[in-house]
Length: 201
Length: 76
Picture (tube, chains in turn orange, brown):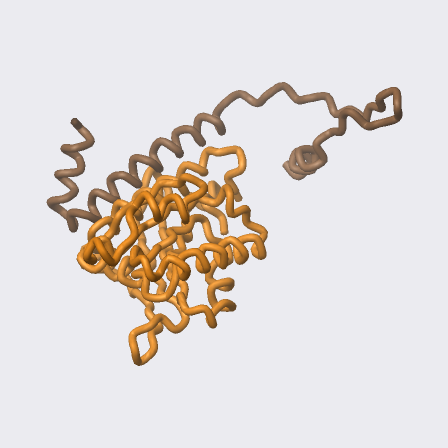
């Protein structure tokens, strides 16, 4: 996907929220959607099962209007976290410009976090994307749970964040850390616009 | 200071968190666009002489014209 199209004066960024099942990816998007002013609210597409699990993906288009002469759009996606939806995750990752990895802070979910991160790396590599350079931020969600049930930020960072990318504590259920995370990934993606490797078409 | 004021003004018009996000993104894009514009307006670099590959003593090619650059140049 082109990050910036100088010809048509358009900037389009595709950001994917990745992570294990029930880590709070959809909740992140729902909070962003809830904060949009009415006139900017497009449609948030959410394909969920009867039990409210994301079946295919969530899609939230964010039309930011014309900024510095560029029509700017952010497209936020989530992937289904459950292991058996591998093909869907691969599909959603196509043309991604940046990834938010939403980790579940619960200690008992650590293995799922690791597995999902490995899955992300494998899928990015399959897409021909370098997992070491793609804009990525980590979000450690569910920090509102009792301390005895969750891993420390230091432990999560040591286990999951070996690239040393920006990380954020979040309680997405009440909006904590959601926009901080989004701002960070947006900044990382946009910072590539002037980088030599930026795709311009 | 001015940025904070701008943020506050925008916050009044739109949802607070979203407005702050929009202000940050706008600033980021403005900076990037400025650098892209500056690059686009910069006087064109003196055209490099397109040379044929040069062989080192051992017959190794040590310099090779950038084929992609040449193709883009020709398309222009």
